[in-house]
Length: 93
Image (tube, rainbow, N blue to C red; front, side, top):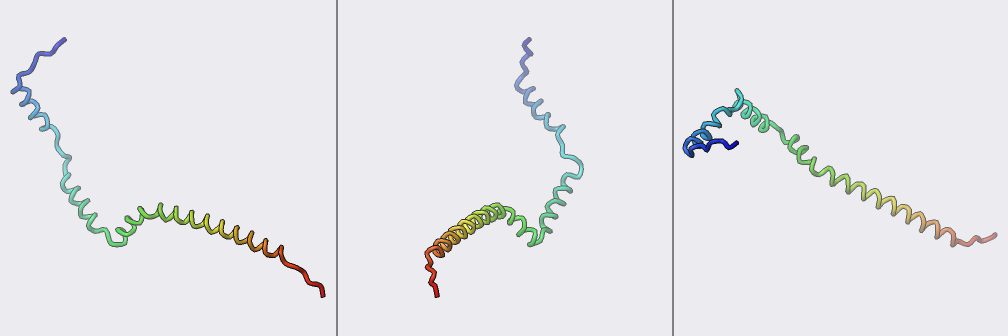
């Protein structure tokens, strides 16, 4: 069933009236201003902590790679030291 076509002027008028029912909730402006004021009250320490959150994952990856490298280096050092002790010669008195 086809609906009767609306006159273009009537359709435009209906569309122009449709947003009239959409309104912000009461005290919307006051809540926005309060949120802005709270953002201004954030101190420099909180700002540093907020920006540090972006760096923490990179620091964790760096720490893990450094730990892996240190353990591997220690293992190589231990093997090198063990090899040098085997080459020693005992002298009898």
